[in-house]
Length: 168
Picture 1 (tube, rainbow, N blue to C red):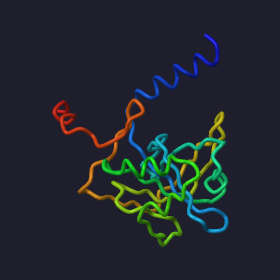
Picture 2: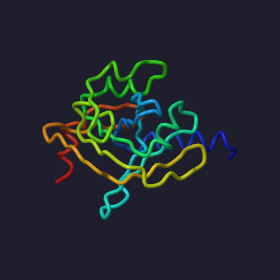
Picture 3: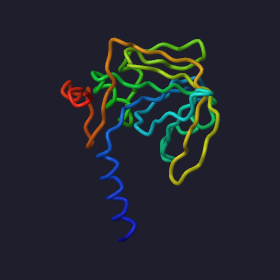
Picture 4: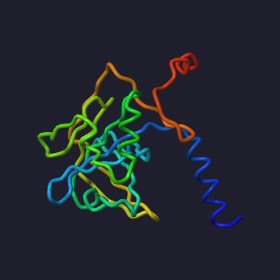
């Protein structure tokens, strides 16, 4: 099997692995808010609280995240599909399309997310065509009235109510 075939199979398997969806935000060197849609997100540690996500080396704002020293990961709510698309689209003013505020720690925080982790960068690890960013969680927000978004087979939306019928 050649490299291209392996990459296609890799994408097929990963696209069929259900995940949550996040928007990661930070600030550029001049203080401009930056953000992008990310589903490569996971917990790392409970003591200390740590999470990770990865960013493609081709992303125009990579330096803001790899050199910025801090970032916020927004676990999207099920009804935030349009926001998810906006932050995945190139060439648009993403922050003009949503309500947000600057946190006390100087991070852009998007309203109405299911949960938000504000982080200080602990480590950046080069891994192939991505950099894995590990963050120490400094603040957590949770909206218990919302449900998180699900990503599966290149589709995203709220977790179907019938899903919970199988959890018993």
